[in-house]
Image 1 (cartoon, rainbow, N blue to C red):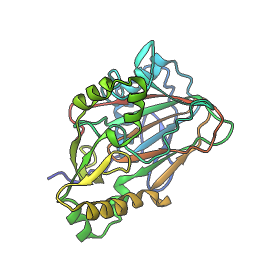
Image 2 (image 1 turned 120 degrees about the vertical axis):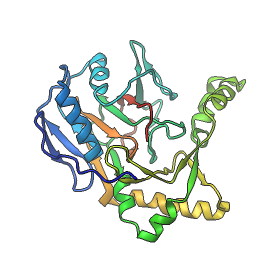
Image 3 (image 1 turned 90 degrees about the vertical axis):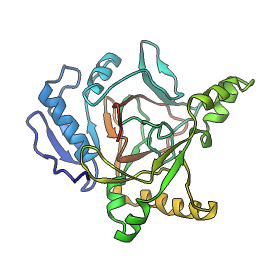
Image 4 (image 1 turned 180 degrees about the vertical axis):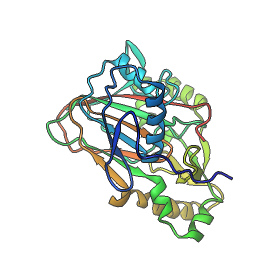
Length: 289
C-alpha cells in the first residue's frame, strides 16, 4: 500500500510562493536558460509533486533551452499528439490561435490520457500573448477527490473508465488533412481506446487522484450508459469549483510546468481575434503510475 508522503516546502535552490492554498506555486531565484544542478532538479521534481503546477516569470528561453529545462522533470521525446511541431525541435508542439485559425483548448482535460502510459507532465512557454485574456486554469484532482465523502470515495475506487481521443475534434481534423480517411484509420490503429482506474494513486506523493476528464473519458465500465453519464457529469462538475483551481495570467516570457497526473487544465478562449502562441513539451516516465 502506498502512503501519503510529506514533501518539503522550503528549498535550497529557489523560493516557492504558494499561488493558492490548494494548488500551484510561483518559483523565484532560478535562471532556466542555464544548466541546473542535480539538487535544483531534484527540488523541482519535489515542488511539482507538492504544488502540482509551477509558474515562472521573466524567463528568456530558446527552444533548445526549454527542452533542456523540461528534461529536469522526465523523459522528453518527439511528441505523440497532433499539434504542429517546431521544425528545429520536434519535441515541441506549437499551440496557437489566430483570427484565421481560432483553436484555443477551452475544455477541461489532462494531456493525452487516451494513451496507456500518458505523459506525467507538461511545460508550456509563452511566445505570443494577447493584450488581455488567454489565461490558463488548472484544477487539482487531488483536492477534488479529498473533498468527497468517504463512502463515495470507496465506491469510485472500484471503477474504471474508457479514454479515447476520438470524441474530440481530432477526428474531423484528420479527415480534413486526408479525405480518404487513411490518416484517421492509421491513428485509430495506433491509438485505440484505453481503460484507466477512476481513482489513481500518485507515485510520488502517495495521494489519491480523481482520474477522469470531460475531453477524453467517455464512459465508466460496468454501468448502464445513463448511469455512467450521470456519474461522470457529477465528477466533471467538481473541476469547476474555484477552491480547486489556479488561474494564471500569461505574460511575455512566462512558463508553466504541471503534473499531468494530478491536474486538469483549461485554456480560456476569451481573446479572439487576438494572436496567442505557446510552445508545449510533454514529458514522460517509463510508468506514469
